[in-house]
Image (cartoon, rainbow, N blue to C red; front, side, top):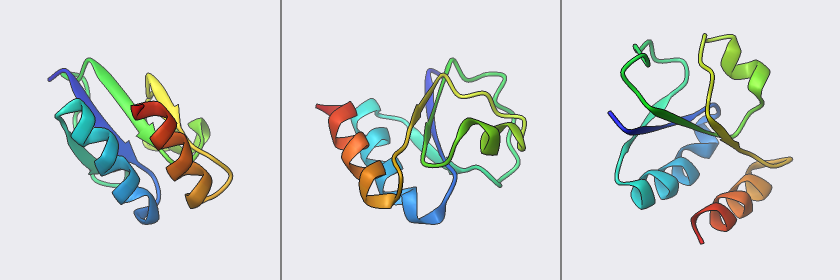
Amino acid sequence: MENIVVYYYPLDQRSAEYVAGELNCTTIYVARTSNYSCVKNIIAVGGRIGKYKEYNITPNKIIAGNGRYDTLKAVVDYIK
């Protein structure tokens, strides 16, 4: 699998779906158990690196802001 978009907060799900739509891939909530060893690029939306490490996930890219609106703005900037 080339890409997957992981989101930390349920409020960031829609932002993650925007990124996934651009990359033509799927999204997954961080708390869902999954094997990421077959994924080339893990893009995280929302949260911080420490939050993802709690779930043994090391994203290649984190798109986040200081709140859900800043995160959405960061997503829009990312997909431009």
